[in-house]
Length: 278
Length: 278
Image 1 (cartoon, each protein chain N blue to C red):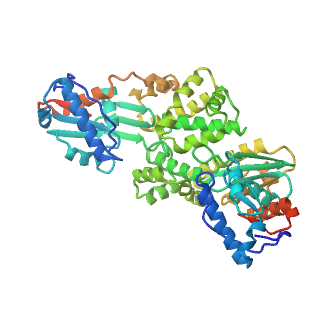
Image 2 (cartoon, each protein chain N blue to C red):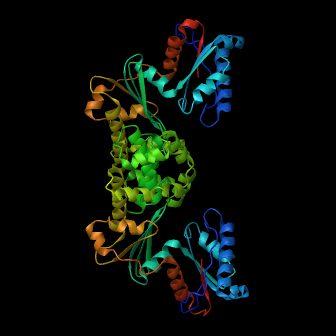
C-alpha cells in the first residue's frame, strides 16, 4: 500500500487470486493481503473502508469478473484491472508502447494514447506460444521424437530422458497430470542448453522468438515505440530477438507493483486517501 | 469370436478397456464383450475356460499391464497384445511393412520379419503429432491467433469463431476441459475446408503430413515396403502424402478384428479351440 504521493507504506502477500476459477477465495486472499499490508504500514485496519484499491488480476476482463469482484470489496474505491495493464504501467510508465509478459504464459499488451490492446494470454493449451509452459511441453515432445528417432537427439533431450529414468512412459505420465507451471518449470533448462548451443534447445527457442515477433508485428505500429519484455522469462528472450526488435527494446522502468501504485494515484487522486494494490 | 479356421462365429461389444487407467473396469468390459460374443455365436459360456483369447489393447506394452491382465482372465490361453499389433496384422497380413494408425492419436507400427517396432502413440499432449486431437487443437490455436490478428483468418477460422459465439473465452473454456476426443471431433472440419482450399486448413494438414512423413522416414527401410494408413483419419491422409510415400501406399488388407483372429489362429492352433478377440 502507498500514500497518495506514491510512497509505499507497506506490502502484504497472500494466496493466489484467480477470479476466473474461484472468486470467493480470491476475495479472501485479497483481504488477507490487505490486512498484512496495513499491519506492516502500522495503520489500523479500521481505515480500510476509507482506502482505495487497484487490483491487477488475471482474468479481470473476462465476463464481467472484475466488476463483480469490485462490488464485494470493502474499500472506498476499487479498480480491478487486468494484471497486464498493471504490468504495462510499471514497464512503460505513461509512455506508449508494447510489453510482452512472458512467464508460464505469454501476453501482449500495448498502449497508444488511451487505447490499450491485449493479445495472447489464452493459456498454453491453445495459445501462449512463447510462454514457459509451451517451451517445456515442446521439450518433452522433442524428447519423445528423439526417442522414436523421428528427430535427432541432443544433450538436452538426453538429459530430459535421463531425468525420466530413460522411460518414455514416465514422460507421458508426467504430461498427463502436469499443470502449466509444471511444464513451465522445464523452460530454464532449455535456456541453459541453448547457451551451450544445444540444437534442440535453440530450435525450441527460435520457434518461441518467432511467435513473439509475429505478435509484435501485429501489435506494434511502425516507428520508434517502446518495447519491453517482462515476466519470469522476458529478460531471457531479449538477446534472442532479431535486430529490428532489439533496437526498440528497453528495460522496464518499474515493476508491476509500482504500476499499480501509479494507477491508484492517477485514478484516486481526488479521494486523497491511501491506495492499496493487490 | 472365431473357430480355429478363422471363421467368425459371433461378435460382442462393451465399454472401453483402458488397462493403463483402470485395469478392473477393462477386465469387466472384456468379460462382458466375451459373454455377448458367445451369446451371438450360441455357444454356452461354460466353454469360456476352454477358449483362447487375443486381446488388442492400447497400453498393453506399458509397465507389464498386458501380462497382469492376462493372468486375471478366465480363458485357457490369453494373449494381450498392443492394439497396434492387431491393426498391423489386419492391414498387412503376414507381409512386412509399416502402418500408421491415425485417429485421435497417431501411432506407427512396422514389421520386418519377427521384429515389430512402435513409435508415436504417446498421447496428444506431448506427441501424436498427426492425430485428430492435435489437428483440432491446432485449429483452435489458429482461430485465436487469427482473432489476435497474429495470423491471417480464413473461412475455417471464421466458422470456428462463429461456432464459439465469436467469444474467444469460450474457446479457452472448451480447451480447458476438452478430452482428446473432443479436440479430435474438430478434425473432420479441417479436412472439409482443406478440400475447398482453405489456407489455414491446408497449413494444418501440411504440418500433419510432414509429421507422418518424418515418422515414415525413420520407420520404413528403403525399398518396396508396404505402407497403409488406417484409423478414422488414415484414409483421408493418403491423397495428401508426397509422391514417394504415395507410391508405397496400399489399402489395408483387413481390419483389426480380422488381424486379431489371424493372430489367435497362429498362436493357439495347437489348442484347437475357439478363439476370442477383444
